Image (tube, rainbow, N blue to C red; front, side, top):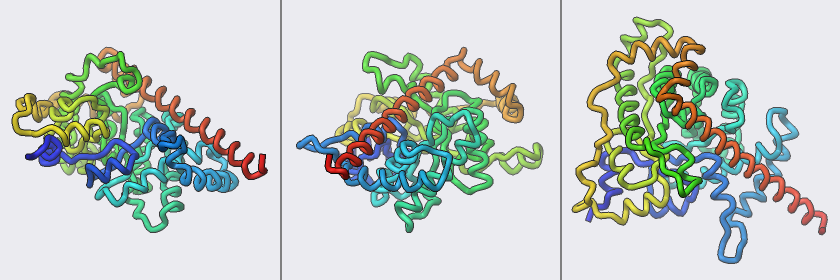
Length: 365
């Protein structure tokens, strides 16, 4: 009997929101594999039945490489380099189970610096080449928080360096329009604000509206693609690309996932939801009537002209984003950036701890 996961795959491309390759072996193959600092942290602290770190061999491999790389550059600390390398090393284990991209998120501490984000992205590509010289780096997509500076970094990476990007933590059409103009391959609207994954007592009261926003964002991307040639001629510098796709993210229930089925091109799904989707027969599922309900019937219409004007004026774009959804879009973006910065720092703390432990062991202490 077909499961909800089977049904979902017939309507939308399914990606996995985890770095646990065991999940991919069970439920794969997938198109893409997505990650972020929270996912990396959650993976590298896993232990076996004896309390030993599951990824000890990867950690032992990465830390010396980070030290070596530190001596050859001035843009990142040993801990930052190790955090990036760990994310890449984990993602590369997914390759046998994917036919699309591995997604690595840049250091959130640089999300308000275009220059540092671009350098970070280029460094991640270099890490992939170092750890897996034969891997095609055109299959690496860099996830970048959708600040003004982050989206300008996406523009530079896509247009000058041919590096694929995903604009993440998206909550507003202002972010969508700028990401499409920048040429991002993907945008990742969050159905739930990030806090819900760290506070079991919290529920995002606007998640139903956010699901509809995902559908509207996909409609905007589709209309931008269909009118790209005409827009280029009419507006000169406009850089609408044909490849921008919505990848819905930050989902907490099977019902949320299935509402988006067919409404967006991609959905990235966490292991618990993959398990539930696979275990639930599609036939007779009580929520069958809501499948695809988030699809946008009409596009943003008159709002398009306003959005296209905004993306050429940084000051006006920032003001519009600040006011979007009565300030909620900016608040949720800031919240997510803060959480990811916290997780980045936790990874760096672990690296320092492991590095010190390794040095003591080497000295026989």
